[in-house]
Length: 159
Length: 214
Image 1 (spheres, chains in turn green, cyan):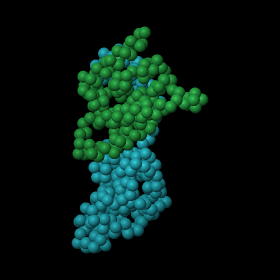
Image 2 (cartoon, rainbow over the protein chains, first blue to last red; image 1 turned 90 degrees about the vertical axis):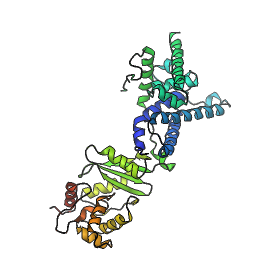
Image 3 (tube, chains in turn purple, orange; image 1 turned 45 degrees about the horizontal axis):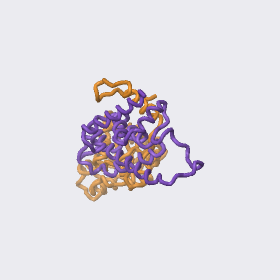
Image 4 (cartoon, rainbow over the protein chains, first blue to last red; image 1 turned 180 degrees about the horizontal axis):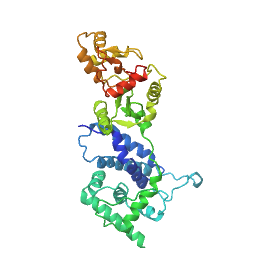
């Protein structure tokens, strides 16, 4: 099939992928995972047979890379360093220091699937079908994850 | 400033929390530029085509390089940029990234040429887009010195096909590397300009740069 130049994809989605990774794995480590995501996409791109949902395809890769990264971090996290060796910590694990810090912290504290679904919905501006593709789940499940995430955030905010 | 995205998925019935999420998740991250992937892609052997634009006296040019060298120099007419890019993707590879710094050398040499300060190009070329016949014709064309001209028949003869002037004209018209492979130096035997891959106006400008105004 005739594929447009890869740069078109990068122009359209670079910011969304970057934001999505900052929200799901934090600002410090997101740049590496961002590179890994785009290189994996670039590697697979010429073999694509369906160009109709490039955004969903791209976020599937980003989501998988984020999961791999979080798992690898969990494996590494066993030895606890001395407090003096600790780098400057971000506001909370996986959270960018932003104006609405409480909201970010609440998003970061969501269970993985809800956090990912909420990030895809409100950062990458994704439709439920795109969220379903990216997370490799059904569309009703995507909808449920967003709604449960929002419900939890609402409870946090009203406490 | 960041833009506030209008929710176009759920018909505007967004509540305060959803608006706050959208605003919060966009506002701060917008200040952070995503890192470039060009160097990492090249290091991983995944940058099949690096391209850049160049403004010139003959309009906007698109230059495209493979790891082997400069493979395409395309004239871009008004509104045709997307078509030009898609053609390059189809003929070379869709693994294509804007990477102007990787085309610094050809851009510099072309700038010098347009300024009248360069008579020959010293560039590594990737000739994969040339058929064997086109390659022979363009080899012969490349031997026409700066500021000189030859006829289609001269070029066909030099390429070993003395009766192939028409075929030579077609081959020159499909030149993927105009200017660098100087098909603008080939004219009709009667002295007429003949044709040109980028249109005759561009051919006139190039000949004038080389000191051959009509």
